[in-house]
Length: 307
Image 1 (cartoon, helix red, strand yellow):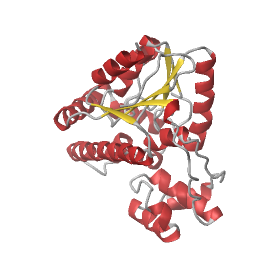
Image 2 (image 1 turned 90 degrees about the vertical axis):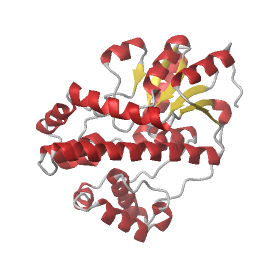
Image 3 (image 1 turned 135 degrees about the horizontal axis):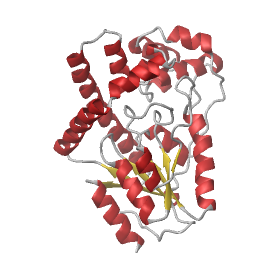
């Protein structure tokens, strides 16, 4: 178990991680209110305007309970990637600390938070619209095969289910030949207090089912319709994956409603497993992660150690 210190401006940042539907956002808000903190969202879809229900973005009412950063900072038709996040998260953390408050990172995009904590840098290869358009016509299997052929080392670590990352890797390979490996970094556990929520399987699957049902009732299909009518193409929506991909396929009549819901539920469960796998990988690299069974346990542990 990691050692904790009192909540001061010089104290470690708090990091709340875990799979989708594990209760991260509510926990982060509770901690922010208790410890005079502000939340930095670590979510690759919540950065986009108009992508609210499908991405699980906290509501306006919840945002009033604690200040949030890096929500609604990009247009869905623009490319907001890890490089943008590293820049903006640094600015947000410095602003929070300047006010004497505690930075609280919260989200499920493990790649982004790991890159931030390890101070990674990424190639400054500019977007290539023509190449992206050409690659966008290929299937996931074809994209991954290209990455594997051109850069076997990157293929071993890339998320083969994420078309945006596959295309970006090929974009970098086009210019540099390979995706440069990340330099060895020193793990700085003293800078972060990391909590990872890992619910029991029965509870977690129940949370996923309930949340999916609630999102459909809240108008998730209508949200995707609005995005498409506002100029976000179906192809672009599909690239965001999960809810946006499957609902876009349904709206194009490529899948029936029942088929869409079943496949979406299955893919969300797979995604949750991949999130846990990523966190376990971070742990093997040397990051000290406090695994907790539920949000309440995380808050109780933090409160006990901070007293």
